[in-house]
Length: 408
Image (spheres, rainbow, N blue to C red):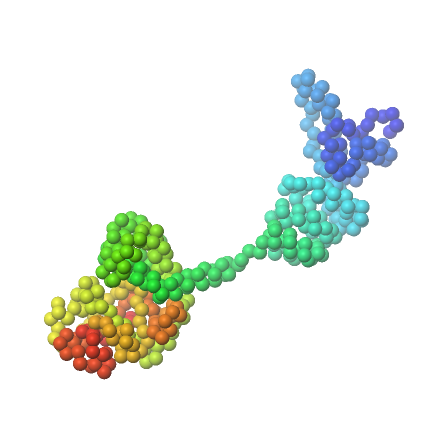
């Protein structure tokens, strides 16, 4: 080609403008092409329509000939080197590596095809420039674990690796770790229940029972009480009031309070078997209740209604406890707070049972808590309506009825 020949690359063309981003002017390209007589390695060969020609054709109503989309020169060179299987060798050349990095840095938002080529450069394990790593992290879909295995990643300065990874690939918690944290959160509800929330939660469970919702139903993960919410709320408040909760406090309870309380019930149920199962010496547990609170639901425990006389009465009764039941290790006489009640339970359990230690509050009470819907078999009722000295050494002198029972 002679010096007076028309320039190969039109300075106003899209290609020339694109090359300027790499610091390569159209004049430089034309001189280079004129000197070698052919396009350099990797240079696109598709015919480009000069801007002036485009305008002329647009004015005539003609459409320019379709052209093959052009690749940036260095991307084309990378493609060629990949095809020839010597990309790493090519990248080992300082000038070639520098040109490739310029192309990568100039590619602000890579297309999927450009990203494939950039990844190949990264995988070549030669370039350790943090800018290349950032491009890979920011625009590729590679998992953190995949990137960490690559030699090119390991060669990037550690502080830059950490900074870029924390920014673009924050460490994901394993499913097991996520579950562990959720379990700990759920287990923490047990402590809340024992501290004071039992005054809210157990009346709610009793309200479900009064409305005919079996524990097996409302303990199901799929249960939704919204259809009975309007009935549930007033029943819940009434039962809490009957059990001695402050009427001022109860008045503040609303649908949101109920939602939170039910969430606590579900949380404890989810992790019940993950609470510690305490050892119960001699399998002996006890509990104290206020008789009238029981007789409303379990009329067969009311000695007056059943016309029981003082003494021992063998029975065979089975009940399903609607709430969370708290018991205490030991015999009734061991605990003053049990002896003060008018109805005392003496339970026996085997070495394996569903009772759990769900919190550390009041350790002196040695509390063992049983889940919603626990089944209890009552074998004997000891009635002391008139003579509370009967078996006083075991049960004190306050309770009217003592139930000898076992958890099923």
